[in-house]
Image 1: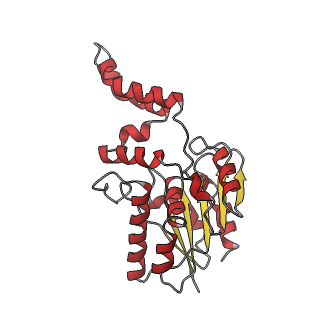
Image 2: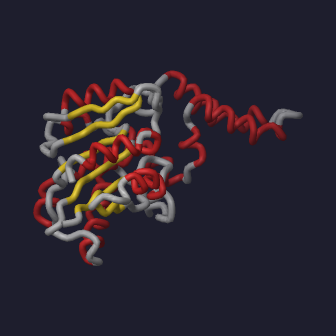
Image 3: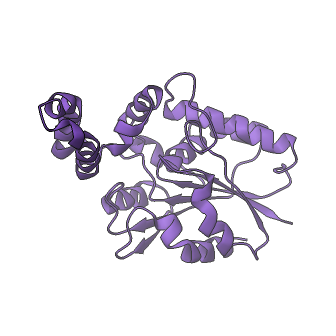
Amino acid sequence: MTKTLVCFHGWGGSKESFTELKEALKHDDVTVLAPDLPGFGDEPDPEHPFSNDDYADWALCWLSQQMNNGKLTMKNEWFLLGHSHGGRVAIKLVTEKLSILHSKFSIPSHLFLCAAAGIHHPRHIKRVIGLMLAKGGKAIFALPGLRKLEPLGKTLLYKLVRVHDYEKASEVMRKTLILVTREDLKPLLRHISVPTDLFWGTDDGMTPYSDARIMEKEIPHAKLHAYAGVRHRVHRDRAMEIAAVIRTYL
């Protein structure tokens, strides 16, 4: 019987983030389902700033829709995968939303976390400086002779201090970004009862490899797959290797 792999993408991504993984699994007996999360891809911004719980509740509604249209059934064994922010959603689903999953659908038989977000870090000094400069940037570029340099200067600034996601987001998504990054999901990790595989690049600058080691320690029976030299796009850059691991559970 065909199994189902449900994938939730990261911040700034979309369902297209799993193109390589779908290609790697195209000859396997598994159906890959991946939605655009609210505020990304073809899915409009939420009407109000979303928290991680809001995203998890939205995911539950989306799962119900998949059952209603026959793409997901109670008879199908299914797996859950989350990359980066999608990892937050997945963690919420298998911990605080587990009873709802059990009553309405079924519990995923396996969890795959790719460079998952959820470990809260105090704001890095470079990020704080970047946000301060971002707020004061208009005054700087208002000086005579600098106005024409504003677009290029702001782009370089945000890339340098890693606040570009915040700057280019809409107001509701800026507030959403603050809400989801503020919550520390580490206390939930020990409550994950679903067998878990972690996939991480050792050079990840967004969700550092140290986060992977924390999750490996906190999640019962978790298995870590590390990829030297890989950054945050582990789900794309190592899609073949991730597919090979998923294939062992089919």
